[in-house]
Length: 318
Ligand SMILES: Nc1nc2c(ncn2[C@@H]2O[C@H](COP(=O)(O)OP(=O)(O)OP(=O)(O)O)[C@@H](O)[C@H]2O)c(=O)[nH]1
Ligand SMILES: [Mg+2]
Image (cartoon, rainbow, N blue to C red):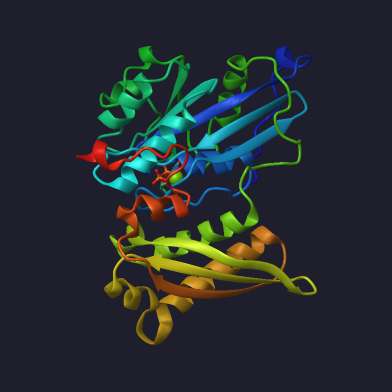
């Protein structure tokens, strides 16, 4: 993650520009990968499984002449359950008041956009860019005519072929973005790169490793909470985290035979957290049952997946 975007082009030199950009799209399109690459830090977890991201996460890019505040959002699918409904609300809120939307679509996906994404975009008046992502996986140069399933670029201010993973065309993306941002203030201190703290990011890294190691379904029944996060001895951090599952039978799977699975999750998560914190970490992991948490508004709020209004989601699901 070291390819930092170039500075603004000369015409933006004198005026300080700033604004908010939301990144939306189908699950697995590469939204979190893009956020991380743009900011140059691993802020959002990434996995090969869809629906990894569950919160709107800010990534702040500050340079001499501009500050762009990107928001990574959960991938949008049909709202089949309460958790999905919460995630869609999170995206709707995230695009509510932005200067620009990046609609990211995976060119290797035979169905790169879905109706839920398009409906949500219809509800926003912000200008939007279409980002055709993962072009590094193509055998020949990207030509939009080869991808009839991508949305019509006429509906967008710009259509740009990118590789969020390799950083292809991201300098161009930044420069075109600046053309759409107003002159504005610094919204955040220049040194701040996210609205999320180390505690949140550590919990997410544990969730990422569990996503990686566990089968297809289980990750969606899991939530991670850091219960204790403190410097114990000189320069050594103690972190106690709980992986919550929603059914008794899932506890055994996460723990694994003789505790092996839980140990493996910890073995992968610890160095990732150390990298984040910049110091040695002692990581203690527990698995607990929180019955049917994905179906409870109270629990979803507790895990931070249901934000804002108190209105019941149940009525809208039926
Ligand atoms: N080859 C290639 N893979 C990519 C690119 N961008 C993302 N990926 C991969 O696509 C998968 C999904 O990436 P994420 O960034 O987690 O996708 P997302 O849109 O945030 O997914 P959700 O959070 O589930 O909505 C991961 O395996 C990434 O490594 C890219 O430009 N090229
Ligand atoms: Mg994501």
